Length: 163
Image (cartoon, rainbow, N blue to C red; front, side, top):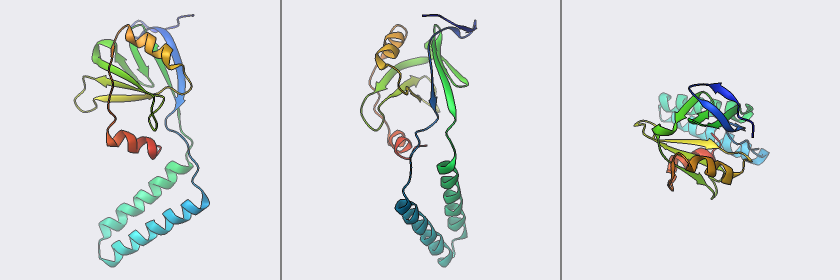
């Protein structure tokens, strides 16, 4: 395998891949109508009960959801190097990682979870796309211990809502 060099800080690339920032999904016409009617009813209720902040919140939620639905996901590049993991614009050195886990059960299947020493963001999730999970596991086990990570409710909602 040819090893590319990014910079002395990152080390040589052992494995690299690309994946979309989130999974795409198609909402059927019936579902679109139901969501739109529910949103209009909630906004109407907010206006009826004289709750303009609630109305504005749901209007913004509707616009955001629509924009997320029509936008094409960005393609991010990932790499495992001799010194750590490069995830788009972030680099996680092996000495900053406590453990890793590759989820194999739906809805998080094909997701690499990194447990970092960070206080605000303790877990980083990286999509593996169609990459061979055993190869990723082989490279990571040399530097970081493998330990199961229980997904939080936020992780599951994030995956189910495709955000």
